[in-house]
Length: 162
Image 1 (cartoon, rainbow, N blue to C red):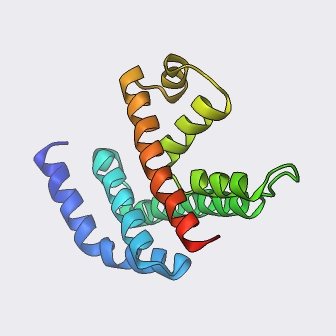
Image 2 (tube, helix red, strand yellow; image 1 turned 180 degrees about the horizontal axis):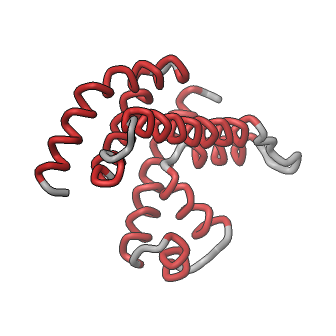
């Protein structure tokens, strides 16, 4: 984007950032999420400023992008919550197994995925790496970090007596 595009972006940003942020906040009622989504929408505006600056109402374009991004994020969060609520441990699982499953669920997504693939599905690290689209050493690091975190989480559970 040339300098003229930068001037266009600056003027749209100055005029529209606060109103778009307000709109997004009123929809989601979460100031952090509203700020993140609004910033993402303005990053999109920056990427497409040459085209969008020719629109009659570029502020409407960025607001529409922000709302779409928010709806997508809210749907993703809803699916994640539904998946957590839907977890019903099989009747064959003992209390220790349930504690392990809950601890695994608390891991970051990449670590959780690596643990499930490596331990539950008994896949070799090369295959875990391929499925995670990373190197074997990165997959091994995810497994290692997950094990360390699981150790701490499970130790907390046993200390609590749960």
